[in-house]
Length: 223
Image (cartoon, rainbow, N blue to C red; front, side, top):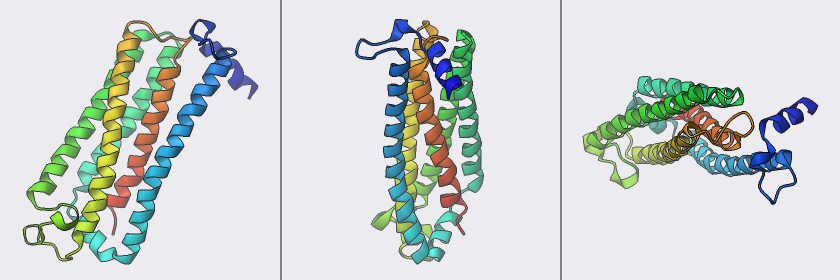
């Protein structure tokens, strides 16, 4: 604990302390607590969807298995690897800032954004394929065009589009925040003495990546 506190003091210099905080450590701790509190609300939101998914999967296991059979698990797996890579580059950007390696940090931030773009492009192709085959949520499902065995297959795609769509929205928000960080990092706003915004966005990005790691087996590999 002592080592952590001394590190945070070293990493968040007094020049960046807002007037309503006692010192740099108080500001840093408040920022971390704030972002983690926000992350708890995000986890609760997705947690409700996970609980609903589990309940209806228990009731209609064959229908959920049919829905998953229309998904390409290889695309989901590639997207999983892409997000894992993006978590690494996001973490490395903070590491470089701690060592005042501005150019390397900016590069890692832009690579993280690129990973987000790749993820969203793959997801767009997946969505288009579902639209083309009439695999839509709820009553929008085209039973004949989709060759659905279960008439209530739209329930599965209701969960699929809701969960992946909400996750995709978070990916887009994260990309926007990381672009903002990259621009600020390029002009020298961050360094070893101050990188709290980068760390906060990094926590958000890691949680978004972690949620996908749960979504991938639930939606693509359900049997």
